[in-house]
Image (cartoon, rainbow, N blue to C red; front, top):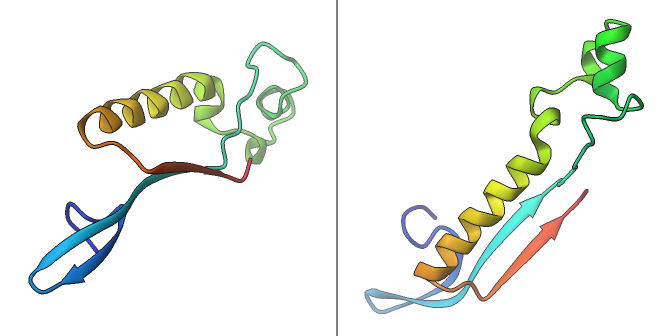
Length: 88
C-alpha cells in the first residue's frame, strides 16, 4: 500500500479507510564510538580492510538522534499507536 496510509494497519470499509493502528519501526540500531581504537573503522583504515568501514559509523549517534526527532515530529502531527525497534 502506498500513500498516506502506507505505515498503518487499515481496514477498508465501503469507500473509506479506517485506521486501526499507526506505527513506526526502526531496525538495526548499531551505535559506535568513533573515539575507540577497537572499532572496525580504525582497522579498516589501518589495514586496508574496507569491508569493516561504513561512512555512517562516525555519525551513528547523530543519525539515531535525527531519526528519533523525526518520529517525535510525526507523532505530534498524527500520534502513533506504538513503535517497534528490531535487531541491533
